Image (tube, rainbow, N blue to C red; front, side, top):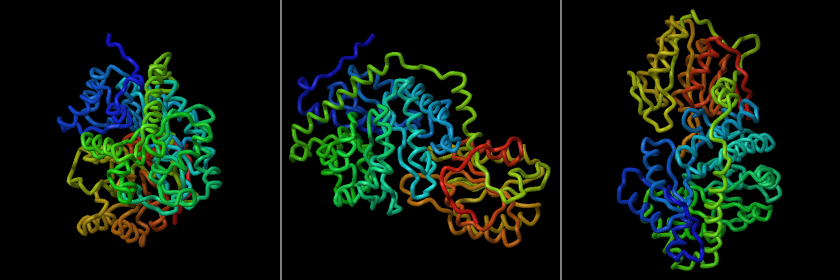
Length: 525
């Protein structure tokens, strides 16, 4: 059996220390980059490695890390939709059940599966508040109290399974400039007092309960606290939660996002991140060789001092030690109740909004024209797989389920940006059936900006509603986009996941009554 030894600061060279503050992200397909990373591990010169949890190569790569490392390197990932057999919709799916036991079961399921795979750190829970009524499926709720309750339950489940919990995206500031920080710097106009009363209320709550091992800093500028730097590069903002008693580690969000890189450059930003109090830099250029050279260069330029480097490495080594402690007496399986909760959470999360006097269901024997929105890279003639890595929308499977539930109906696929031909077919077919049921989605992804429907989709639904053809919209993901639509009498709302698609269609067919409740305000005409 391999002996895992703990590294000591005084035995590390400067070169090794500079590797200890690096959380490397490796492209699986690049053997040169992979070999560099594994040599860094062999030489005790890498603090953490970030491995995507949803790639076909993940398990093999994790096995190689385990075989190579003889010290407790931090093995990190995201798991916002859960892992393995317990994969569900995004966090708002759990939030709409308003049940802390579901949040605990979700966190524990992530912990159990992650530890089995070989991870010891997952960057969850998300502590952001949906304060701007963004409708993001990633977030638990629009009130700080419910975010704090649900996130604490999730973190407790993770830690009971031996997994480190990392809260994100610090400091949970308001989004006063609606922009994706992958693309440009996000902005908040909150004062320190306002921030302490909102976003930092959640962090302080979890810190006081001892539930956060780490915090991920965002590329979000709170200009009334620091008018120059975003949180990830701001000592003023990082020190707020340190002064409130947080003693864990700080890791940046992906440092190559344009929210940082566009203003502070690809080089100096990595050094500044360590200088101001982050203990790990999460590089996401998929070039760990180049990223390590940049970190080394920032030391040579004096951006990273010896004193600050030692502080950061001490924190990383302490967290590596903590992973060994957390392995003791950890839960290795879920209870029957927790398994049942994970199996049913997508059903319990389905929400409906209907006109007075209507039910959520429609006739199963009726003749309905189903218009199913698909992604623009899909072939509407019949693609059986989801070509996006999120893997939730399988058109052939959706069509099969619809026709099983509504045998006298038809299914037509239409793109997010439909062609004139697709719109024409949809309008013509609508005349041949009793009514129309529209299946839509707004999938929150990086580098797409604000969620919305294309104007062509809105125009199509407006045209259909001139003659009241649309009986229902079944929508997955961000519900705020629905405010662009005309009045529609029946909405069924779910998540971007296979289980939620199935559950929403079953609600439409009247197989069970929905129980979910919205977690934010949004407008329906």
